[in-house]
Structure formats: C-alpha cells, structure tokens
Image (cartoon, rainbow, N blue to C red; front, side, top):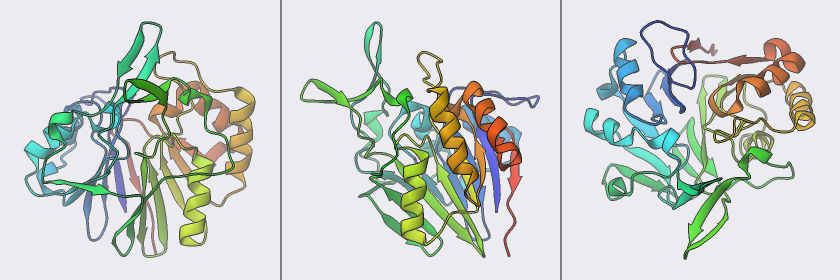
Length: 276
C-alpha cells in the first residue's frame, strides 16, 4: 500500500506548497483513492507536480464536513469525471468556528451537495472487502479541548458539534491493516476502540490528524492530556503517522513519549506500507 501526502500544513519539498488542510493519495493493489481534498485546489497542483494523475482515481472519501478537508471538492469533481465521493450524510451541515469576532462558517460549499457523484453514508458502509467506512463514534475517552470552539448551527442556534459528520476509513491489504482518520475530532482513542470492536484488533498503521491544536488560536491541548494520550498509544502495537491538526507542539510531546512509534508526514511525504 502506497500513501502520499498531497497537501498538509507544512512542506519541506521544493515545488510543493502547503496550506492548512489535508489530502492523501492511497494506492492499493485494487484501488486509487483520494482521502480528503484539502482547503482548495492546491492538492491537485501538488499532485501534478508529484506525477499523480487524479483522473485515474476510482473513489474518493471526505473525512468530514470542514472546508480544510473538503474545500477542493469542486476541483476534484472537475478533474475526475467518474469517481464516487463517499461522505457522511451530515457532511453539508452548517458548521462554524467561534472566534473573538463571532461565528465563522467552516463548512463545505453547499452548491455541490446535489452532485450525483456524491454518495451519502449513514454511519457505516462496507464498500467492498477490505474497504470500510465507520462513523458516529462514542467512547469513554475525552475529546481534545481543541474542539471547544467548534459548533453546528440549527434553527439559528449554535450548539457544540457532535461530529456525526466525521468518518474514518479502514483499509486492509493482505495482512496489513490501515486506519485513516482526517482529524479525529471524536478522539483518536475512541476511534481506535471502535476499530477494535469492528475488526477484532488494532490497525497496523494509523494515518491522520489528532486535532490537538486549535487552528484559530494556535494553542495546543492540555500537556498532561497529550502525555496521557501518548502513554496509551504507546501500549498499542500500532505505528502512527500524524499531521495537520495535531500541531507541531503537540507532536513534539507525543514524539518524546513514543519515539519511533510516531512520525510526522508533511506535504509530499511518501509511505510504502508493507503487507504479506
């Protein structure tokens, strides 16, 4: 399984640009998959520079209904004429971030919601053997306090976002099991608990953001909480590749505790995940 970061908050490769967002290209023996589209069409520009043909992608997934993961959706639908795009049925909700100036819309472009290419998913979907989506995560572990400024508007009332629009992608190829999580707003530990319930054990690899830093303030989550998270993750047999909303300060805390069990993937990074 080959995973490449098309766009992320950072870039250290000449010719590839960065933005606050996430987009991953995944190639398996059977599929070419786009996981999220970043905040703009930049993912497509980077893909071209990396020699990746987006028109050959045969399916796409949006992890949740925030612009930094689905802002490039219109560009993808134009560049690729056939691939279905799987997203939770609540993905086009009215999602907002609370700032000192008030509430700022951070959702998807509603003009796209009637596209016949979009496949709305209710909670869980087995696309095919080894390719599965799951959502509506509830668990005993607390969510990151970096979620505290995220809301949904219903009937002109702003309420804390329950993140039922967030979904995760479970991939299996041979004996290699991979979990893709866009932002893990529901809590990466809760997502892992649900993964274990569904699939009978931990994934070999987890790739995605852990939402340990607020994009509006730049502040990372409570240090003691991050250290406790690192301690729990370290007890799993999983290797973690994180990025985006984890944030550099939180990542350093995780890295100090987990060493080689966790790595950061910036724009242009390529992972070759072994399978047997």
